[in-house]
Image (cartoon, rainbow, N blue to C red; front, side, top):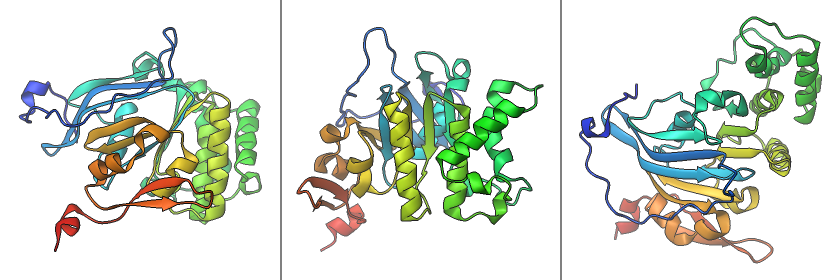
Length: 292
């Protein structure tokens, strides 16, 4: 469990003065960013999993968090949600602490973190997205059921409303999770690997929904692994490897140099059918790159 303490009690070395790319913001003087993370350090078993991370997410962007395994991507999402308490730093949601803006944030966890054998059906799962607006006493009624069905319709799962969740495919399960988040009618959506284990059809359906959310002014932050699709899917990106390497518009910070700093390996430049150059980090470690 990540412990809470002061920075002086961590026993960690002072951060170096390595490359830092300031966040480019879309905010105005009277409009706080959707998410503002400052000086975030998180520790697991006395090892830093996040170190002195600053990330500003403007409202209305579709942002990817990318980095190698163990880079702290999921930890960053969970720190934003208050699920992990950092040893230092703070998170503001629309200029306020998370607990004061909890209803503005929807969370889609990794599919593998859920017990899909739990005896409940699809509609009941999606209705859970309405619990935050109901409080602890009120039970879901017709309004909540209609909202849940509407959300299932958006993700193409209305026909499965009465299906047990254990009977769904991986892609269908992911759509149900997304429908639950949509039912919450939040302003900010945090998603941990929403495309993991889904087929191409489901991936296209999910990204279209995320684009629709962005078009209505919502903010979407997603942990993402496929670097080749970052320029196509996202307009904002944070490159993370325990420390923040860079964060900002894709066209500004998704560069070969930043990818090398993030992945510490070989970087290939891919060219799509339209002739646009896209950066892609190959799956090679520093040791492989240095090998004779």
